[in-house]
Image (cartoon, rainbow, N blue to C red):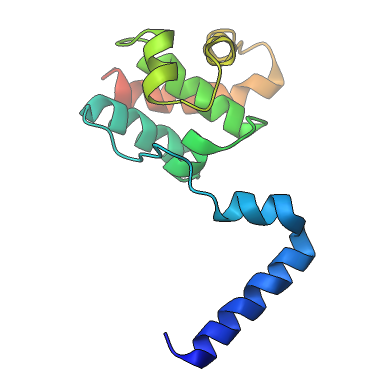
Length: 139
């Protein structure tokens, strides 16, 4: 890296720091320990990739997002729902969604199980569920 590139990088860093502050800058620079986007079990990879494609997000944001709101909450719920067929909630919490509490993971699974076609807001998620059932449950 030459001097011009170094100076440009420092200018970018300083402007980012001024705009976002210390906490957000450190969060952007911090790499979480144990971040893994590929697992040994092919079924886990299939579930994560299928759900992330269904919700048009990358696997990293699915696994490591700090907050589960909106579609992210349903995406995590679908992952837990399908992974629960072969794993326990504790295993899912300890190996895949390490940044989330077991209680929340269980709530996400219940959220998917409680989808009802009578409610208009649940219909898009039921369509996604049907699509994922065909891929992950071989229906």
